[in-house]
Image 1 (cartoon, rainbow, N blue to C red):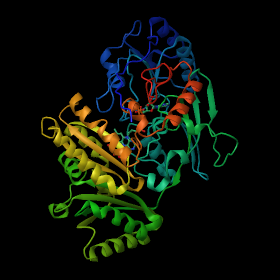
Image 2: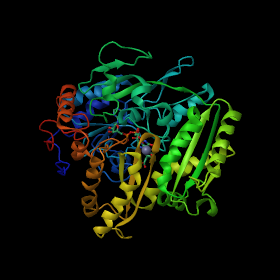
Image 3: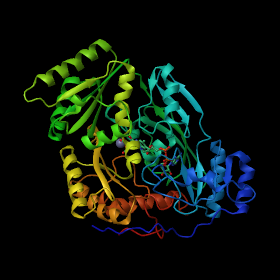
Image 4: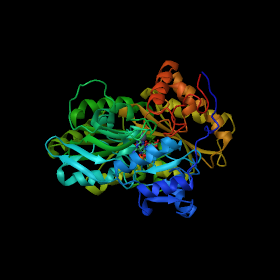
Length: 502
Ligand code: FAD
Ligand code: MLT
Ligand code: ZN
């Protein structure tokens, strides 16, 4: 398979000029324009949060960030950019982990943060229609008194936006229960690369009238247009939620445990998350959640966080307690011990260990993050093989790679392989890539289970998509965006745009 590194050079697009800025000033108020160009002259430091990604791994040089307040404003901006051949980076909460949300060069950033109105909610159908810039946590908070939940939850919920979630097809912690956004998103409003507003903001559960165009924008990473509105099916809030952190003596027990948990908890099982020992230790080191007692972690090779969500507290607790009893009585037992949350604070604290892993990795060092789909029984092998490979290259020491850890969504077959280094260096990257992608291809997995391709994996797409698929992706991109202005270089290369993948 080909593996060629892309040098992040894009064809010549027009840079934003003072003339463009003058035009944007006719569309937006001064408070919605951040630019280092005259006459706006915002200090460059104020543009930093928009030019650098969450990991501080990818850095752009945009001079201008626009924060439109309506779909019409987005449309007018994009129409102008298309005419002027100004490249545009749609940006939500900028929590993406593959460098897709920041410019590569000096593209214009269109940030959706000012579009945060809830448009409607129907408490009979549970269908919510919201501006794309609504923060995921705000949507969850809005739904609490209405007894509904967003069918999506992730550690970045305090910053990520629903438009960003849709554009990355984010998976997260509730996918096991509610499925992917390809199922729960019912409609979208999108500003296409020529400024046309595509209104597919339907609130219908069923609509079999020809091609389902909205699916193209779910996971398109801002390359086909800017999502401005989302219609999503929310779920009835569970009346009872419980969780338990189980410690396991060996990774080999994870799969049998998963089968047993599914069998015994059946319809009330809502999450089954895996954390290996090294990842857990880093979470504790960096103060994420409440650490388990020494006796609870002793001899543990890994942990599993199980959550139940149901409608009858007594029934759910009985089922969960019975499961734990059965597990403890078995000889040999699949688990060493379990910590059952008995209060909302403990429930949150156990989740905080899991949700805090991403932040813990970043506090510990510079994380190379691979979010891959591989068969469940290969999770440990992938982690161990990668660690040994780095050791064989002489890179496994505190000045280079400090840790190779794994965690992930077992129910979704999604492993998060994290290589935590002292610094991002070409030497470590060259040792990891294509090594990791080849490993994934060997197991017929996917190089991105949920984070997307972004700028990080554009060159590696052939490991997960064959040439016919890539060719049709490119045709679709060319059709929607013939001038290639929408988030260029991510996640596929257009004709004459960067390095062609053969
Ligand atoms: P951004 O980061 O701003 O953008 C991401 C991509 O979408 C970019 O390509 C951007 O151009 C495009 N985009 C953004 N908004 C729009 C729009 N309105 N229209 C068109 N394109 C747009 N991801 C998971 O899948 N599962 C997880 O469990 C998970 N947990 C995370 C935990 C932490 C602590 C962090 C930091 C990240 C996590 N992520 C996870 C990754 C990330 O949060 C998600 O990908 C999220 O969906 C990105 O949303 P955002 O609003 O921040 O988008
Ligand atoms: C997660 O599952 O925690 C997220 O996808 C983020 C990460 O991979 O760190
Ligand atoms: Zn994840």
